[in-house]
Structures are given as C-alpha cells and as structure tokens.
Length: 469
Image (cartoon, rainbow, N blue to C red; front, side, top):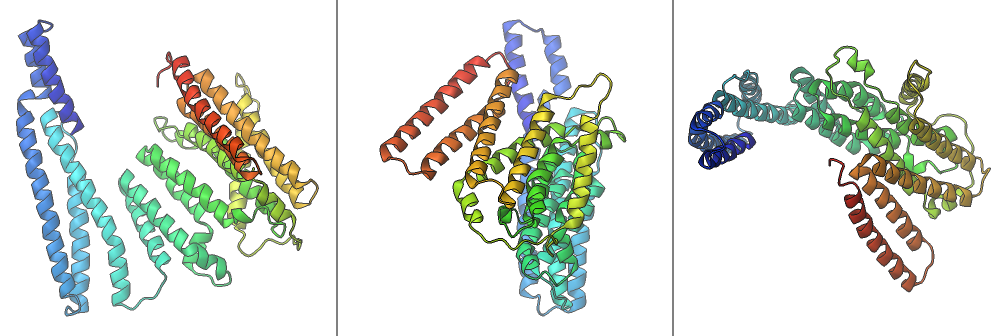
C-alpha cells in the first residue's frame, strides 16, 4: 500500500516534470516502465478483490465455526479431534505455502507476491492462535486438568517454537504476550502455594531466565528491535517481581534481595554487548543502544519510586526478624546466573584494552548502581536515618535528569532532553504535593512548571535546529 502510494505520487510528479520541461518523454517512459505506472489501476482492482475475498473467507469461517459449535456436543470425540487437527494443519500449511514464496525482480510481480506473503503471515498467525483453542478443547475432551496459566504457558512455548523456526516478528511478539499472560495469572498461585511444585510453577519462578534464553537470540534472528525491547522489559519486570520488588525496603527481607532487585537489572542492561552474537554473523542488528536506553528508564522509574518519604519511614518502623537464609520464593538459580553474566559483561566493558578508554558514562552508571545498593544495605541494618535515604534518592533523580538534559544538548537527542525535563517536573510536583504546603504555593509551582516546560521545549527546538531529528 505504501509503495503504491509512492508510485502514484511519483507518476503525478513525473507528469508535472514533463509538462515543465524538466525531463523529456524518453526519461518519462523509462520511469513508467521501471515503476509500472500503467498497472496502478489494475493493482487497485486486484487489491479490492483481495479485500473482498478476505472478508468473504472470514464470514465463511465464522459460519462454519458457528455450525460446528452448535453441533459440537452431538459429534463424537474422534470427529472433534479430526476437525481440530484438520483446521490447524490446513491453516498453517496454506499460510506457510504463501509466506515462503520468494520475491520476484519485477516490481508488479513483487507487489502481488508481497501481498501473498502478508496473507500467508496472517494465516500462520491465525494458525498459532488456534493452538490455544486446540489445547483447551483437547484438555476438555480428554478430561485433562490444569490451571489457566498453564494453558497460556504451553501455548506460548508452542508459538515460540514456530517463531524460532520461521523468524517471524509477529509470532515472537505473540509468544511473549502469551508467556506474560501465563506468568501474571500464575504469579499469585506460586506465591501462596510455595510448597507445591509443577512445571508451571517452575516456569513462573524462572521466567526471566527462560525469556533471556529464548527471546534474546530470537530478536537477532528476526532482526527486530521491538522484540529485544519488549523482552528486556519483561525480563527486568519478571525478575523484580520474583524478588518481591515491593518488599525491598522491608527489614524482614534479606538485604541481598534488595541489592539483586535494584542493582542487577541496570548492571545487565548497561553492560550488554552484541559481540556474543556478532561472532556468528557480523551483519546482525545491534541492540546495545536499546539496552542502554532502557537502563536510564530503569534508573528514572526506580529513583522516582524511592524518592517518596512514606516508603522509608513506614519500613523503618518495622521490628525486623533477621534471617540470613534465603526464602523459599527466592530465585537463587536466576540470580546466580544473571550475576555471573553481569560480572563477565562488566569485566569486558572495563578491562584495559589497546586504543580503547573507559568512558565516563560507564563510571557514571556504575556509581549509580553502587550508591543505590549501598543505601539499601545501610537502611536494612539501620545504619542511616530515613531522611538520608530520601535525600540521596532525590539527589540521584535530580542528577540523572540533569545529565540527560546535558547529553541531549551535546548530541541533539530530543528523547533524552524531554526525559530529563519530565523527571525534573515530576520530582518538583511530587515533593510539593508530598509535603504540607499552602494552596497558593501549589498553584504557583504548577504555573511555573508549565511555563518552564513550554519555554524549555521551544528553546531546545531552536537550539538544536541544526541537528537531524
């Protein structure tokens, strides 16, 4: 569709160029032959027919599904099984046949084959959606018990296998969504039934490690930055939830749990290197900038959360029951593996090498990790007052925001600039609302923040007008 719009616009411009005498008729004919100007109307008719066939196929499929659902109970188990397997195989085989067709060198044929590939991808996606229905119906037919989250986990693993085989981005994202649905729905059951073990419990407990093993290589195979970004967010979120991130400041929680929840994710993200996968293929897409951007997002969210007073003061009033043993829910295997990986990555990052200096940003990020971890440990042993912890995290948040703004001004990065402005604005407004202040003062703060944000945006756009956006 986008290519057709480009060709249509190019034909209009070429006709105008010919009328203005910028190009002659021979050059216009070459452009018309190259981009198939004369086939645009035929392509529009083919697209219209393609849409009608697709809508008709959807309505036909809905009619068949409704008919089968109305007579489902009257069908024998064997007929049901044949129907489910036949529908699954027909959808996937036809989708794979259309998807695997190579693109032709001719532009007109390439458009048709591209639409076939898109249609084939849609059929493959539909076939993977049918996997969940097949699993659920087969479990019901053969009276196989299980929780809903186990269905989503098994469904997600099946889609992951298809995504690894075909290298299709949509399948990888669907698999990640299904695994996350299974993780979130099964999280409460794993927390409250710690003594009961099943394959679903094991997957939920070690979901960060499973996601890292499956989806990081899959992002390189699919050459998709979105797969890497979403999987990294899921890995960090699942790891923190497995470590009970919201109990980090609880004095009954071992101090190393807080260190792992707060220091391990940014250490992994910032030190991430593509060299492990680039050894096999030097043309692979690089995801290190994405991982480092997520590091600053992690710092911003965590520093903002820990900058509030009520968390530190409420946890400091608890009477701790000190225990050095790891709780039953503590994912020791995941933490050990990720810690060893982070140490190895930081060693490769900071080791002295010829003609390569240690960047100041690496020292800056490592200082953030060390300071935040030290505050958690000192707070756990009641070595410092809550006011010091609150002040430190507010200071870290302000320093992070100012550094983002400085980097944006040096490199012309609009995202970093607005990230720093948003962090500073949130910090000022949050502190103003958190502490007792007069209503007139609150009104003044809101007005000043609004004016400052508008002025900062206009000033930045004028300053960085020479930078590409």
